Image (tube, rainbow, N blue to C red):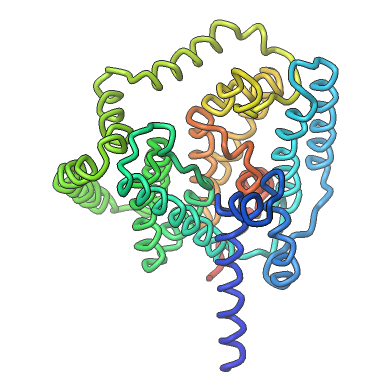
Length: 400
C-alpha cells in the first residue's frame, strides 16, 4: 500500500513538473538562457518525461485518414509559402513548427486515448503555476523598480492550459482544485498585464459553470444565487483591487483597468483601435484571402508588419488556409462542439463538457491573440483539443 502511494505521489509530481518546465513560458527561459540554445525548444525538455511517464501518458500517434490529410495539407502549405516567397524560408519554417506539433498532438489524441483527464489536469496545473511564477517575478520587478514602459509588462503564457485546468476542475467538481485554479487565475489577472488573459479566464469559469447548472432541471435558483453572489463580490472587491494596483503600479493599472473601462464605454484605446483596424482591413479585402497562400511569418522583431498575425489570428488562418478551407473547418468545428454538448446533456459525459468549453474559448482566442497557434509549448494543447473535439470518445461517463 505504502509503495503504491509513493509511486502515485512520484507520478503526480512528475506530471506537475512536466507542465511547469515544459509547457509553461519557463521552457523558453530554460532552453535559451540556461542551455544557451539559439531558440526555445521545449520539446527537448519533454524527452525525459516521455520515458518517465510512459505508463501514464498515451502518446501513440494514430495515422488516421484525417491526420494523414492534415499532414499532407501542412506540406502543401509549406510548398505554397516557399513558392510565393512573401516571407523568408526560415520564418515560414519557424511558424510551421508550431503547426507540426499541433498536428502530432492531434494524431495522438484523436480517437481513444488512455491518458486520464486527471493527468491532463495535473500537467495544466504545473503549466499555470510556471506562468504564475514568471508573472509574479515580473510584477515584483515592475513595482520595485517603478518601471513605466508599457512593453515591459505583459507576460504571455499557456492560455489553453489555463482553460483546461479551470474547466476540468469545475466540471468534475474537484473543489480543492477549483479553489486553486481560481486563485491562480486571479493572480495572473492582476500580474500579467494582459486583458485577454482576464477574458479567457472569465469565459472558462462562466462556460464551465453554465454546463453544470444547466445539466439538471431545477437549477434556476442556483444560477440566480451564483450570478448574484459573483456580481456582488465584484462590486465589493473591484474598487479595493483597483486602488491597490494603482498605488503600486500606475502603468499596470492603466493596462488592466483603465483600458478595460475605456473599451466598455466605447472610448477605445490606441491598441483597441489598431485591432479594430485589423478587422476592417480583413473585411474590406476578403477577395485576397480566397485561396491558400502558405504559412506567414510571426517573427515580429525581424519581419516588419507581422505582428498583425499575432494580434488577429483570424487573418493568419485566412491567409494560410484560404477562406474556402477556413470556413469549412469552422463549420465542422462548431458541428463537433454541438455534438459534444449533446453528449454531455444526454449521456452525462463530463469530458465532452470540458472539450466543448475549451473549444469555445479557443475560438474566442482567434480574435484576441495567436500564441496557441505559434508557441511550441502551447500548440500541443491546441492539437489535443482539436483531436478530442473532432474524434473524442462519445460514450457514457464513467466514475473517476
